[in-house]
Amino acid sequence: MLDFQAQNELLFYQPIIESSHVTMKEDGYIAHLYHHQGCGCMSFVTSQVDVEVSGDGSIFIGEVKPAYAEFFPICED
Image (cartoon, rainbow, N blue to C red):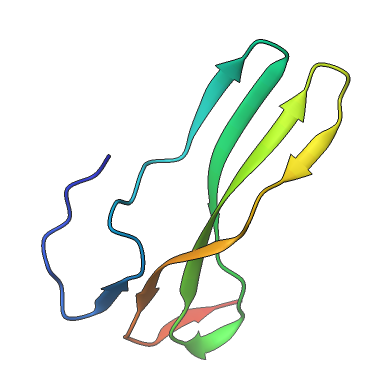
């Protein structure tokens, strides 16, 4: 768990922002991941999702939830 100070440029949608990590299960693992999609110069919303991978290779993608948004333009290609 990260301890964030209030920042005018960021809006947090979740009360706790965890680092990306992997948790082992009896039959596979769960990866807690972040993603943002975008290209150009704009503000971006970064989302979090848990991806569960079972021992037989099955993949389940959990609910994608917004984690935080940046309110300053960032240019990405």
